[in-house]
Amino acid sequence: MQLTTRAIPIQKNIALVAHDHCKQYLLKWAEDNKSVLAKHRLFATGTTGNLIQRTTDVPVSSMLSGPMGGDQQIGAMISEGKIDVLIFFWDPLNAVPHDPDVKALLRLATVWNIPVATNRATADMLISSGLFEKEIVIDIPDYQKYLQERLK
Ligand SMILES: O=C(CO)COP(=O)(O)O
Image 1 (cartoon, rainbow, N blue to C red):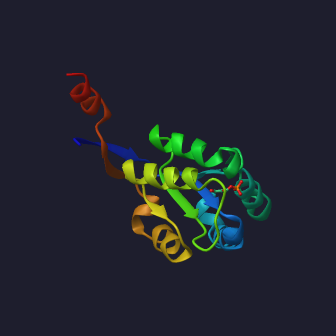
Image 2: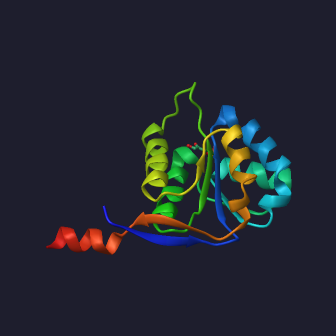
């Protein structure tokens, strides 16, 4: 796969997602970091986003609830370069009905090389990184080249 680059701006589009047993941890993290998060644009799956907005008073654009398609909506945004960071506290101890969507979301975040945190320790490292408040340039798949190759 040939690569190109994409600039992630100072003001980032951050997606926040948590499974039910993990929501309390993401809510606490969002509350603890709300002064930093408020400088960015927040997106989330339906229940997570409404809870974070209610708890922190920071505006969140909420998609559908995860099992109803919200993970897929966030995944589509990642594919379109519209999400810069994913904080996804997925539950490793309980099954969810939309496991394929969960896998797809994590897969697309990896394909498009965005920073991802799946637990509090990583989320803390990410948000305290000097890069969090800077413009950074990431490698991404060169889709035009990919398509040209396939159409030869
Ligand atoms: O199911 C989810 C992620 O897979 C999250 O969805 P909710 O935020 O609607 O609970």
